[in-house]
Length: 195
Image 1 (tube, one colour):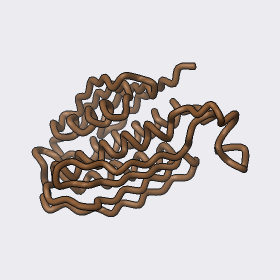
Image 2 (cartoon, rainbow, N blue to C red):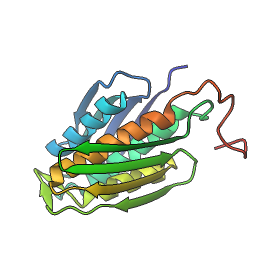
Image 3 (spheres, helix red, strand yellow):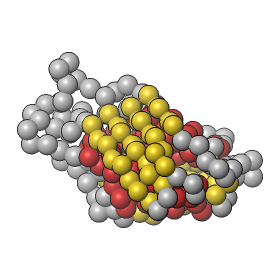
Image 4 (cartoon, one colour):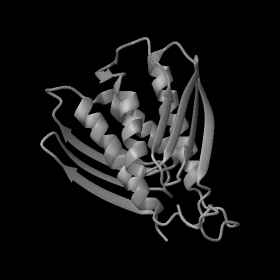
């Protein structure tokens, strides 16, 4: 069964098209209008082996907030749709990822309950044209729209670019593990019988 989802979302602030294949090869086509954010989403695609298409027209004349937050909402939606009934998936995933001075931890649970724990601060307010305060907003939006737990902790780091990139890649690796199929799981990995 193909685990592919496609979502369109249009508001007065953003117009978003996103398509994701959980069982891809890490190919991406990303255009958000924010160069550094594109770079982060391309890294997420590559390191999670997710095929990802993202096209966003946002009100960047205001700032990047609506674009980044709404991208998180739609990414959460495509993840939730692509995992479908969650039968056979590992459900949990975690990864500790180094990138030069940065060391990032990410753990996820596709449990059907939204929660974000975000323990990270950045020395720079901006990386390129990207407001670093939006990293938390992005992951908050993903967690709530995908109905998943996301725990993120920066274990070490000085360079904001490296730190943010390590977070996105750690999230990719953790999510890749969580959505992977385990032949021993015949239904869903829960004593309740549903996720």
